[in-house]
Length: 442
Image 1 (cartoon, rainbow, N blue to C red):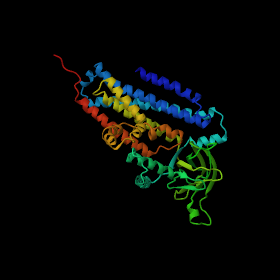
Image 2: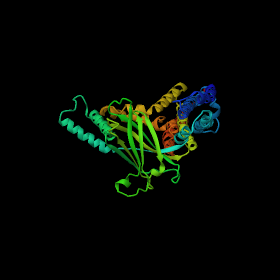
Image 3: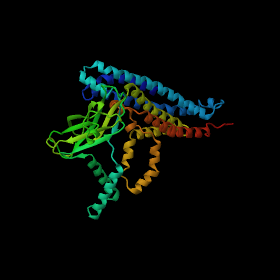
Image 4: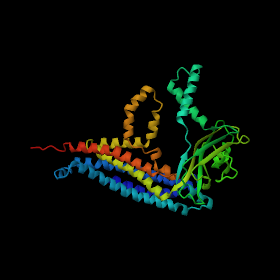
């Protein structure tokens, strides 16, 4: 097929070109992140389009040109014909993905050698990109926040401060958002502390191991330079609470300024983690430097737990899962739909999977009645469609040096292929086994 040749030529030409022309934010790390993000995205997009085209064309073309008449007269079962079509597409996808994945991997390792980088930049690239890090995010007790929102709602309702045109659902939703904001706020002169358990380092005894604190700051009032100055303390703060004369685990203090509405990272030695995997992170809002309440959003502890190569292979497997689903969907649809209709349905499924999070979030603001209709109509359909965005986007993990957990990958394979694609494929096989392919004319 010409479309297959076009996809191969495009990728062979564009991937090396992208590694040269893309600059990102102008830093070597930004160049690597931009190239890998767009490279994996381009490979995924073009292979998805190729998979949709081939899977919807192969069986429908055999039916249209009557090539299948020669096969069905043989002692071959109908489900074997459908399975054979699917297996051929899966093999083709595996070969192409492996080839172009190897090209991206090779170019990713080559890019730092083609640009001038100093020792600081090289260390940052190795710590934040050529690695696989696990993360522990700050979590809040949603049930407690919801109870606080309910209490505030009752108080405001009794005092007549709830607008008449605002429904109970809308008022609670807004109050719950306010409670979440309060939980993240740190007024001037106050401290905010988070405790993390289960910080498991890849090599616990490595003296050069580091842990990373990732965060984003907001301010409740406008700042002249959009910068917040704070003091961070990282370590086992339980030692201070118990009044130990001599601390066993070091506690590090970091003075850091950070611009608002931007993610930042800083690192401290990994020996700050206690032997039982406990770590405390505290932020002090210095009143002499800040006159505003600071909102600490997405505070997270990152630590090394894998290799870049292994993580890159997992990212390719995530892409292959979506290719396998689209292949199964396309072959199944052509067992009972024409080629134009089948390819249209596949494209809709692909676009819905790409914007799945946005589509699902857009229904959160529905009222009670419309919410019930959505739960029993569109929601099951959206569940059957795969998710290609959010946590299922492999580029998100690679560019941030995040580990794709083995359990997450296994669950994605189980749900996408065995719970969704397999059902769709079995339905297509069932329809095809009962379909009349041709009539005997006497």
